[in-house]
Length: 519
Image (cartoon, rainbow, N blue to C red; front, side):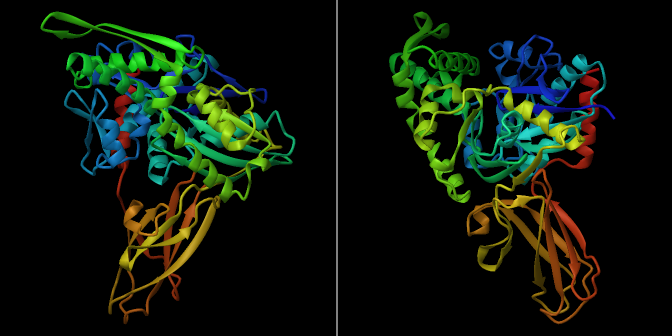
């Protein structure tokens, strides 16, 4: 069996690592970078370009260059925050036949799973070039607050890329593993993970080599892309006020604004002011118009205050769920590129009352943790045990739109829980159950995972036939459901009508197509 690699599939950048002699090593890509832009382009000939090469053509090929696919994966096109994100993108986000958010590339619909698979395939090739051997297995990380649908979609992306995903690992947990392997003393960690598209906070206890996640919380609609958008709006609003032209309606200008915004944000993490200079950004009656603007750090921080304010509530919720106070936390780890922003660091200090650890690389630690987890699974690191939790309530919709919770949030996984349901009509031969995931007491306000039809029940008066439904959550946070008729012990047939995702045939077809692209 080949070696298992660890992949941090990021919103903005991705990273791959492997365990060498018990130490996690980040692998340089073919361009010499330790991280790879999570960008995929289709050029005019239909060829696929991934990573740095895709980023280079972002401005010249904006409607065929996809970034931030992770924010769309496992999501519905009709969701409010997806519509908000899509309204600011140079490429088109549309609903697939089951309503999932897909991308329209020159009239061809591409799923976020396929787009992510191109990035994973690139990471696979990077590892193969380094190791001189074929790679078929990986540990892939996801935000801790990803739900069942998003996790399954990430696993499907791995399958399309030709990888067996041995484990789906939460990003904050991965960071804690990479840090804790070298800091084995007993302690409590807060992992504050603000990446390109998502924010996670996890509270962990390390005791005698056991890494136990006590609680996790997050916001899957808060990340570096949102901070970029604040700068884009700042520049575009000023330009519109001065020249009466909205640059956001021009896909090429929008990409140039995004590039400039990202650069300005990075520069303002070390400098107090930065200049944005975009010549020939538009054409007016008098000829070309240039955009020149100075932005200072204070201005950026004031504009980003609503985003910075959103960091506090998830942290307080995670602390409460972990039965901890900030004083109980021994170390705060900052993970994700956005934690380089001084205002973000100041918020973390304000929340936890202590300076964060400086000993981790926020861009690489998650991939390193994924490689460490591959060593735990393979038996190389036998002194380490990991106990993670499920981030959401899982349950069933009852009459009156009530959410009947079967597995509660922050339950240690893997776990199994059961509930009994009875027929409500005479001679009923099946029971239809809708499964939801989320924290709201009304099921319809939560995420619908699918509809389960329990068939082949014997005809009997109502309430007489009872069916026991068991929810099993595996270590990857993915749900499986089984059912059996009480009394006979006979397993009832479970037909799952998934509300989202790709079919097995679609995954196989996309895998074949991707394999042809990268031969």
